Image (cartoon, rainbow, N blue to C red; front, side):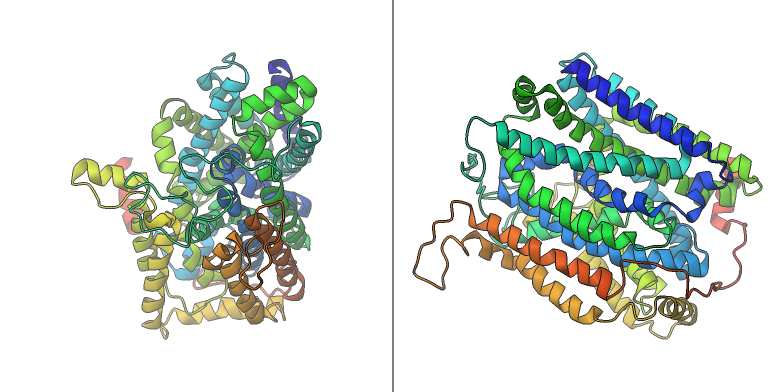
Length: 614
């Protein structure tokens, strides 16, 4: 199995390098290395969206959680509906913002719209978090998996550097366009392999699996139900929740953290640099909500039941039946990590380069020199990421834990840029600051720092089984709403109105039916993964509306999940097609310029810092 696994990994990496070389030989302008000419093929973004979400969740991690917690952890699969909807709404509008106002990066878009250098700095900080600790944590886990799969033939540190080096070669050669296209094909491979492995495992199994056989219960964990709406516990590390940690509110807040993937700086950059067309709707409806949702809700519990003893035990079992299927199982987990590492390192590094280096430090570089600077920056980024994965795995894990919830705190700012023109700069900055502080102090980073310096805090991680992303966003939104209400007639409102009027003119009747669909989505969310989801525990197995006791043979919660997933996919389709968010077009665009033309002079505090350093 080791030889086949290493051969398959080598084939994936060589394919990436070959595709990157072919991209480099297309004769594209040097500036296209950084942004793909803002015309990335639609099929690439279409296939890459579900890959980003699945890789960000972590295939091996999610399978392990479902094997341990059962269907309550599997309920996270319901998040593919809100994630697809968030991608439709935000990516569509970010594409129009880029073409209308010539705001080519997320930092430039938010910074120019709100006239705020601080927002640019926040975007840069998030880019660094995604490129280094977040990617390093994924790479460290993948290298540990490779060490176990090869029985120690490739140690963890060696695996880290081998995978980082192979990924760096492809990125340095192909740039943004080559990376996106290569990862899009890798995303197709992962989705296909998950389906093949799941079906083959069940067809060849000698013993009954899920849902015929029940998942074993350990430590009182309720594998077939949600353990209530909320639990009055002080958080992980302080008290142990009874029945499991995935309460209805715990699941809902965890799904909110997944939105941080589609509004991460690199994901927004992908939306801004994609070509016009209708592929966004196809990706959100059929690939993310449809195919990926079915894999996570229907397929993962079936496969996780076979992986209760770990992935290596199942791989060894499959190897005795068909070696290629055994290797496919391990490739699914490793390829997901490779996809996440490449996407976030390359996208985030190019954003940092464009936002900081080429704008303020080296603005005099021509396009050829900019391409060289990008290649050097990518080399350094992969080196430092591999260094953290090799020698600082604990620090990487602690910093990675705050990356997604911190990304979620950008939602009010992005909502102001794309939809809600009345959200002001001061409100965004105040809410963002408060939300980020709360995130830090409901994750290990803040708890370790504060308790190491002062006294123990009364709460642990995720108090009341509510994810830190939700804790931060609730206070963030509350402060944004209060502050925006006090600045409704601020002079900056004129510039914000100009952009929103231009977007409305460019999109035409794209918002028709949006209010009705929003109301239906709230009702659906309440029942699908909100507090109403606990009805699914007994709705089909012990209904209160009849005295009959149906014999289903499957858990009631699983039927509830499948039912509301099937209802959710048409909701995405309506948003993509009826409301028009599934397609983008340049036909009605009338470019505008926000405020005075941007200069290349850095702000005073940044110029003074640079002077002191140099």
